Length: 202
Image 1 (cartoon, rainbow, N blue to C red):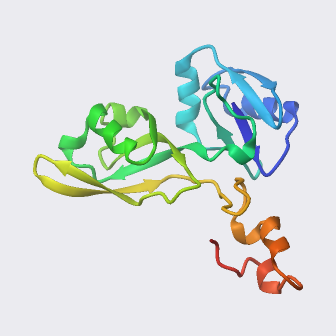
Image 2: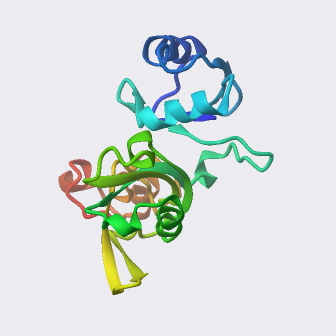
């Protein structure tokens, strides 16, 4: 399932994007579902994973949020705070390069989905890249603690991309300092610094 943050594209626009950018990767059937969500039906899980591995994707200036469909899938965007993002584990020690260890490390951040192809085959040893579903409504760590055979250690991590999330209204696509709900709470006229983004993000 896919949803664009910040715009409401037509089915034709999304289909044209898929034909142009995913043609060499996969050929999903694109359909409009409801409430701004589009469904992408792939012929195989491998094709779906290839599209996810090439992301994140943008249509114009809007970010495309892709999520696996499940029977409990919520189509209410204000309830969607778990999103898949690529997480980089920098300067990973050689003894940590295994699917089991990477999965355990990823579980400290969110719900691990899969590693990219270079990580799986250890073709790029400067960092490991894992797709993890994280809760962007909570504070995300920049490093994690590890218990290794050689003693306690910390692992530095980097998020390849994170969507904006507003703690005021619980929606993605903007920060709290530009939220309409925040402005309604303020008394008097809106200052020029608020309009220009001069207030700090909560």
